[in-house]
Length: 289
Image 1: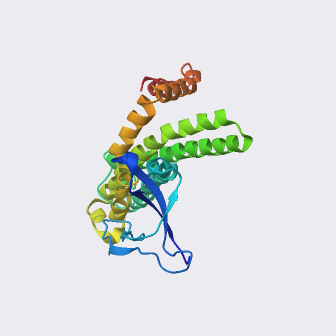
Image 2: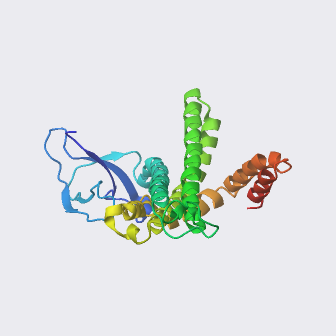
Image 3: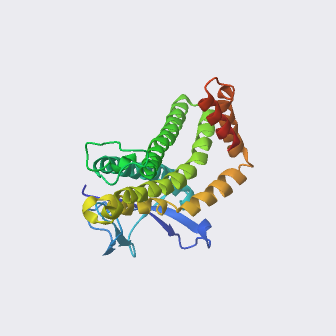
């Protein structure tokens, strides 16, 4: 487009010290008159990965901006879209896991080495595919569990967001508050957990390829480099932990975690006496943990 607007955190002249004095401003590339605002690029960042998404360092010294919302409440306003970005970053983690799994599965079916310890699986071939090796299957199943389980977690949050939007349209403030609280509780969990296991799944992708995974031509290492940022931007994993424990659980006087545990118990209870031994065992395992 002809214009770009930036949401920038900055201080008003009389702002108090610390984070309590930060405000949010809208700073456009072009002013209403059409002339360029006084901002520019000081450097292009040379990153470890995500080379398809170039980033830069911007300088706003002397630029004109317009206050968004209430003075000195910039961080509060910013988090209205930061939380959405954190869920998007969680999706980045499971996307990397899915890509690593697809690449690893193909390679494990094609790469042949040795014979299976439990006996030859493909006697007409010079060697068995490595997918028959238990350790390789463990890595593949770990990647698959991360991708599919993570996708389910994201779907749950998407459903909650839809329910909250429906409640807003219906004017049900109590339901909006309930869904918003639930989403706020789950956001740091998804962002922190799915980006970390996404990294692990990408790393396993390199491991499945063996030495070939360390070579750029095979693209396995690119998945790891690209997803490495996910546990850093939009708040590191450690920040997510502080947010979950300090802001969500402790400030909520344990109510969010108690409600979450109660929901899990309600889901598990019907299966605790199931005739299916595996389902029954899994239900007890979830309940214990």
